[in-house]
Image (cartoon, rainbow, N blue to C red; front, side, top):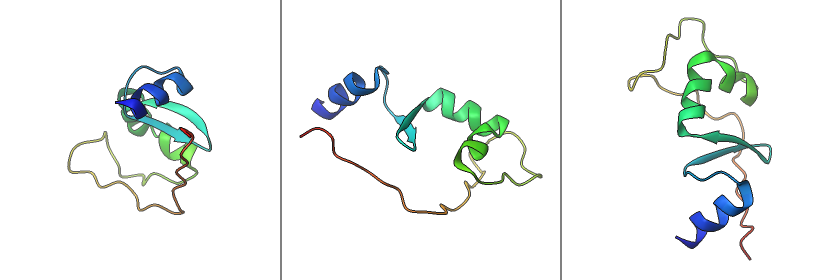
Length: 76
């Protein structure tokens, strides 16, 4: 609960999960799913979405991560 409260206070975004790219809040689940479906998420991540990809579905596999994920603990 404390981490959720602190994260919401830092980001100003009320819901969890939250996606950050390069330290910038992109949004919550609904926004990220919409960005994935339109191809905007791939563009923001700097990866290409295969041209044969249709709208997202539970069977769609996300592209493999091309670099390390950086997590920081800022709740000290």
